[in-house]
Length: 245
Image (spheres, one colour):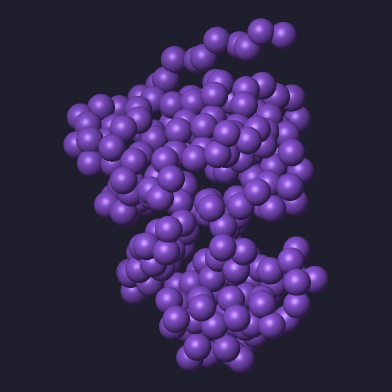
């Protein structure tokens, strides 16, 4: 599904990612964890085209997407849910969700309405409160709307950047159920999560990053049980070799 090989990327000439290798299998939930500044969110930004790679490759279903503009990557079936502030607070739940189909709006309102009704069957809030302003929702409810909006295009892959950030325990339960619903519908999930226990409990596979590189990778259960996991968070990782010019 996703195959990342030797990925280098960063900001303003400073590399944050330093030779990242990552594989994500179709239909799985994958979680990237690691200490602050490890490059976790930068991986998602580079996959979605917000950030251009300096070296390496990103392939989705064998198609090279590294360096392509975000719109092309979106049309290829890769959708990202940002870390926070992802909704238009003065628009309704329904209006926010329909915005997820903006790039296919020319196909007609009937098709968009039909997709909304499909999603309302798996995200109950869409049916219960379609005309409520998004700004009045709780944190967990807002996330559910963001997930539904991402699903409007029936994507192959959804990228979730810190989906539990700042949420209370009740909202965490909503997020857990929503992620499982998306995956149950056949969508591949790649998420970055600072709440390590939450992320690993949901995921099939996990990647632990440190200092812009992959420190550990494997099944989520094996990573959770790995005695060196905390060493990654509190220790130092060796730097990766600079790519050839």
